[in-house]
Image (cartoon, rainbow, N blue to C red; front, side):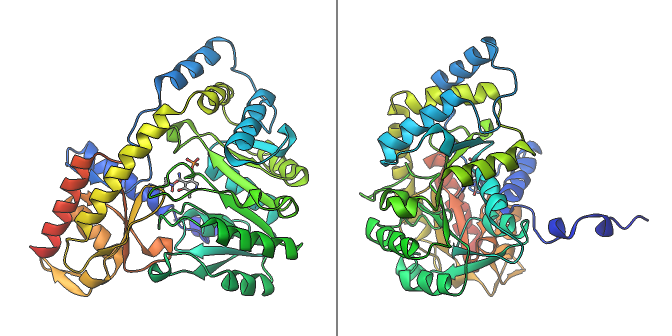
Length: 401
Ligand code: PMP
Ligand code: GLU
């Protein structure tokens, strides 16, 4: 027998598969077997990509956008991204500051590879998206989690960040609106952190703004890069088309950064993926520049789903869910139902609970543990109200009998 463990790199053995993608794949396998699973696991809009964007891709394909592009992406697409960042986020960039990648995930990966040395510390407010710590580990870097609590709206205290920076961190990651908690950093908090960044020349901020459009109850999304030109030099802004335009499968994201950082990221990309698909890049021009009625309609629908799922979850004895201000996840505290047996199965933690709900109630959720929040479950409401109602009804039935 070959010992493959010995063949695989230590880097790869230090990480886990993505819990979000793994849970969703399991739910999809069950659906393919004819099991009626309510899939509240993956963070993927249920809306289809608008037709005008599809036609733009078809046209680009027919027009011959079928060849390699520059490693940072096509110039005209980078110009469209600069226009978007200027008009929507108040950020001034030139095309040389932009690197287009195969999804925001890939843009983050490139940024980590460009910035993190083995042993470097990266500060990540937690609960956090499952991929950040493992992407950091792939660089040999050390993820340092800054713990936030439900009581504080899952927002960090700037003093926590200041302490962590003083302890020698190289990168601070900000994800607002946040996956999984739905927290949205208020402008005052961002301004305070921008001031901290101004004072520490050796820290770089990576701000993942993929959920920027998904804000509710009057919350506003502001980019931390908009507060200080001095801090902006060391801020990498990450965004993409997956969520805003329901284009998860197209794989298009981008980063905006100072030229030396952008060039370093483009170099990483040039030695790996090369660039994202040429005709997908061209379709991005249409997505970014067309009127955004589709996006507004989608957000209004998500808002209604958000209220419904949170109110239904709070009706389950032992479950508590606060109203998220952003993204499209309910992050519910299920600790009150743990430590008991259901239908003869003892459930002591969030992973066992998510497994039980998938196996017995046929509802896919993601356990809080891989997000750094034991006792919680993440439920995506990027699915119809009817399916949300059915999913939560099944959870309630499984836990109350
Ligand atoms: N950041 C966060 C916080 C996410 O939840 C996701 C998942 N879609 C991504 C980045 C990556 O998005 P994509 O690669 O599809 O653009
Ligand atoms: N980001 C989404 C999620 O958290 C999609 C899957 C992934 O890339 O993690 O479910």
